[in-house]
Amino acid sequence: MKKRLIVAAALTGLLFLTACAKQTVSQPEQNLPQQDLPGKNGVTMLCTIVDGAQSGDLLLARQDASAYDVYRLQAAQIPVTVDGVTASAENLTDGMTVEVTFSGNIAETFPAQLGEVTALDARTPNQGGYTDLCGLYLQVLNDLWKTDAGLNSDITIAGVDLSTAPGELTPAEKAAIIWRFGEEHGVATVTGTFDELAAQGYVDKEHLQWEDGCLFSITENHSHDAEQSSLPTLHFDAEKWRSGTGAYYFMNCSSLWPENGTWSTYQVGSEAIS
Image (cartoon, rainbow, N blue to C red; front, side, top):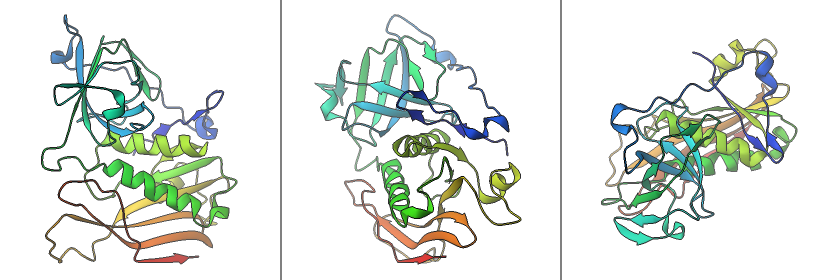
């Protein structure tokens, strides 16, 4: 698997990955589909609000797109409608689908910047159609960060593995979650499984340690596959790993999706430390 780096923003600019010397990944050109070519009303792009609705500093993931299609947008001065009714940025909610109208120009930073945004048309869920799964997984990762904080107190890079997290996250949603997690904690981030990160030179597989980093992962738990539930339920495990004798586990976690709401809470079945 080709290594993908997601760079977190620092207070004074971009925080460059310590791993850049191993392999540098440049941002690809943004190729808009033919139907998105600028017209008199501009380009439209359908996105999910991954985070930031409360502050108006939106982190967006383009739907049905690659891991590079993540955008940052200040919503305060942009005209907003919700289901076609005039609203404001205060009416936006994480997890909403939003159609963004802009000039068609994209600054190829990460997250990318959209040029001349003129409208945001948000859509409320149809019978609970959005779930804010991104918000749930950000909460899980942040809870892991705070638990037994000594394991990650001095790291400069965080590995994040969401490759088998349940819920069918899109590549752009996964990338946005990972970038936001790194931004919140002031560390660079890199994606990959344990074996992938070892192959890329981050993890010392022979001595079972990551000297300057920590791997955070959320994986599907299949022990409940045969169970029946009246409402959708996520079952997963989460862990952070620094070494063979330095790891923390949230095991047998579950989250129930209400009929009209989001994946807003979860329960941990048991915890373990090594």
